[in-house]
Length: 134
Image 1: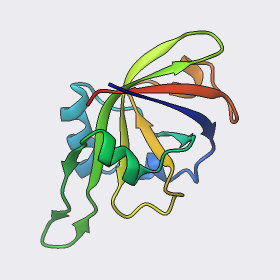
Image 2: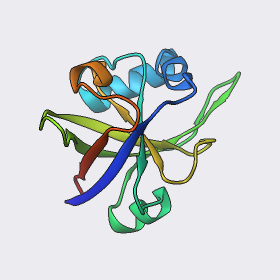
Image 3: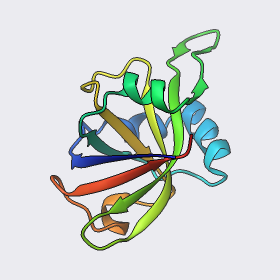
Image 4: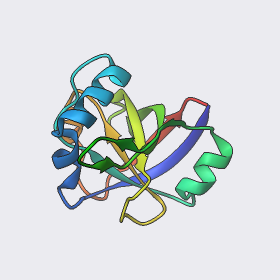
């Protein structure tokens, strides 16, 4: 297990767009064993880029998906637990990093079947701990 601290940040609202796409929704549903919430929770990792995370904790990989019409970008993902450091509430989630992400290198997106901001009572700037299962 790898533990990392991070801070909640607002995204651009694109996570929900992609999770809402049938192709990604089906993949994430299989990974989670439940239908994912239509959005992601962005975490800015302290002192850890996604490349360093890959080096320390081997990710699972969903490769680019080629159809007759499109190429859908793949992503790295890790099973992990997110813990709100203020109230101790935690949830098992998937942390992912799209291959084509425009986010800074130390941002991962959390996916769950729950609206994590509400469920964990989190707002921008709140500190969390991510426990990656390696």
